[in-house]
Image (cartoon, rainbow, N blue to C red; front, side, top):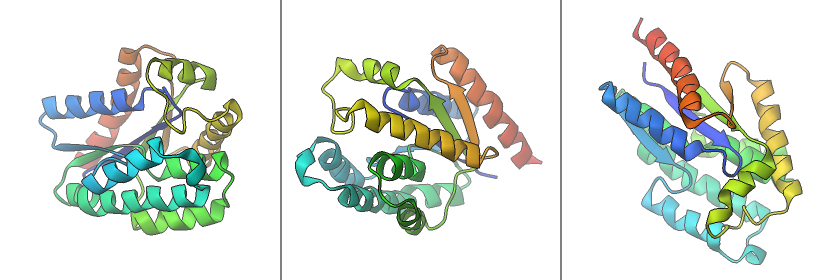
Length: 208
């Protein structure tokens, strides 16, 4: 059974690093896999993502963010995720619908029922088999991101990022069977080991 695995977390939590490490591990084991990211997994998504992250913050409303992130997501689901799963590949995505729930729902304060409905339409109801949440104190994550030029989201006030963190905690608590919460203050190698232990269990179940 092909797996759909997503990585979530706040700024600087190490999602992209761990998604890449898992992808490379699967390839080394000759397990067919696809690695994608949101919103830049497709050419369409890359253009939208650049505007959403680096555009004029004053001109982008929360509802615009919600719709555009889901436009990019709908394209990724149709172009990358569903075809990958149909081909029997494990699909790994750096961010997915849960990001929109916490950033535009909890962070921006949009109605959660509306956010969920739009997410559902964009994903065609496709849910991950496993979502890895890399949990890191907000202040620590923002410190990690200070090296480069901050994007629109990294420039948000601390209260925004705390709401995002609280949103992730609520989502993980509501579906413990889907979420794997990992302490992102651990070493990169320790985190990768914890994730692999869970993924290998899911893979072995699928082979039975």
